[in-house]
Amino acid sequence: MPDIVFDSLHLEQGFNFRQDVQDAAGWLTSLTIGTQQLAADLALKSPNGALQAVAVMRYFKWSGGVTDPIELKANISTPNRNMVWSMLHAALPSTSVQFSFQITYFDQQSATFYTAMLGPSQGTSLNARIAKEGKQKLELSLPSSLASETVKSPQNYEMELTVMPAAQQQSLTWRYAPGSALIKQWGIAVA
Image 1 (cartoon, rainbow, N blue to C red):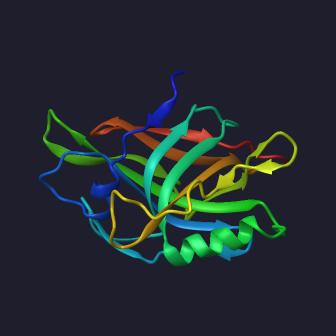
Image 2 (tube, rainbow, N blue to C red):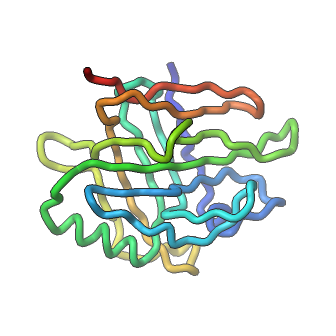
């Protein structure tokens, strides 16, 4: 099965959605790392109307398997960047992650935006844990201490996060075209 990749999510469209711009955009609508809930402090617009978001996504990748990681690259506000920064410099009490997101895409044939990826399919958030590279390095980072040059206001910073599913069955919705939804399992329940 080919990877589900949105590698050209447009940062400017995510921060300043315009109906006449046909670029894909994505948003993290909630994110809790360990016990720290990042604020949904970005008041934005999407094709579906007003939206409160934690981050504007630049990249999403999932190989589609039930135990495959999800890789996210997104830009967060200054207060959320400061919270993640403090997490990176302290011992995290937990590597658990709860998050939700949505990605919109433009269909040329019907000339409309549609929700191409949605997580979770049901419920309020996906449950995961931060993936590790090797035995110790957590895949959570702030790759630059510089604010974004693409979107200067509000000031925002890059964040990268890779997560593995929690030991429970969850689902995501993937639409490769308007009106054609696939509900895909992520995670395996352990009895």
